[in-house]
Image (cartoon, rainbow, N blue to C red; front, side, top):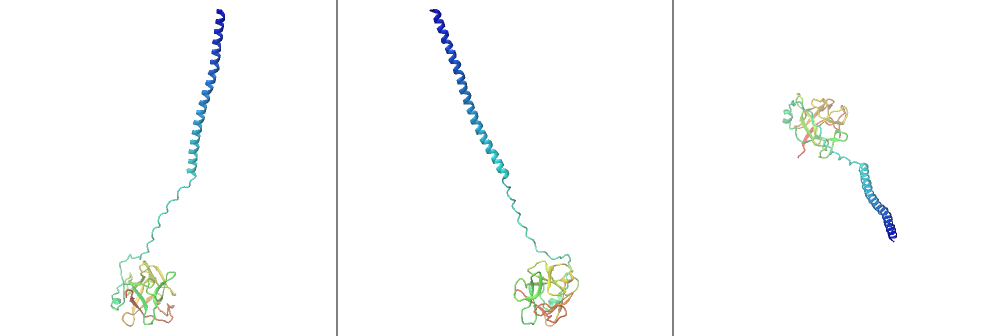
Length: 230
C-alpha cells in the first residue's frame, strides 16, 4: 500500500510538472505577443510621425520663395541747367526798354491782332502756334551766361533745365540747357515801339507768319512780352 501511495504521489507530481510546463510556454507566448503588439503600435505611430515630417519638409521645399518686394522707383529729377559760370549778360538796356526778364511771360507776335505765342509742342519742339495761356506757352527770358550784352536764353517754365535752341529750319528745338551753347543764346534787338524786340540766333532773326518761317522768307519779326500773371 505504501508503494502504491508513493507511485500515486509521483504520478500526481509528474502531472503537476507537465501542466506547469504546458502553461509556461503559453504564458510566455501571450507575453511575447503583447510585447509585439506594443512594439507594432509604437512603430506605426513613429512611422506616421516620420511620414508627416517628411511630407512637411517636401512641401516646404517645393513651396516657391516669396517674391521680393520691388523697390519703389525713385523719382527722376528734372535736368537742371548747366550753370558752372557766374558770368551773366548785361541786360540793363532791355529792362529799360520794358522787356520783361526773369518773369513768367508769353512771347507774342506784336501788332498782328491775333494770339501767336511761342509754344512748346510735341517731340520737344517750339513754335509760334500758341493760342491759350497755359504751361505750354509760359516762358522765361533769362540773362545768358555770356559776356556779350543783351543776350538771353529762353526757358519754358514747365520744363526746368531745358532751353529753346535755334535750328536751321523751323520749328525750334527744346534741349538741355548748356552754358555758352550758341544755339541757345539769343540776341535781343530793341525794335520800334517801347517793349518790342527781335530775337536773333545763329540762323538769323525769328520770322513769323502764323508760325515760324524758314530764314529768308517774309513774315513778322516784331515780338513783345506779356506778363503771364496779367
